[in-house]
Image (cartoon, rainbow, N blue to C red; front, side, top):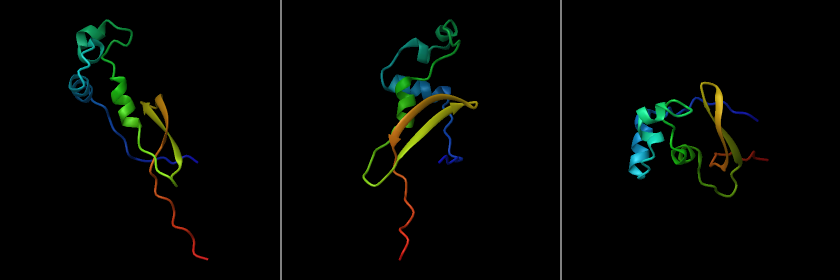
Length: 94
């Protein structure tokens, strides 16, 4: 089943910059726009650990495996299979 939902998180340049600097990742491809302009993408790349952090969760028994797709402008940019805590329907009374 596919459930579409309205929740979204737009990653900003500031988010990427702060995460990279707070985690001591000073790779210029993440934090230096002039340096990144010379790269294949032409702009700073979102730190991969930040991307993964947005996608992962914790598992618990009796919850299902949910596949999450992350997209940008309608293009899938990452996929991640994780156990997510989703509330189940109450059991039907007999």
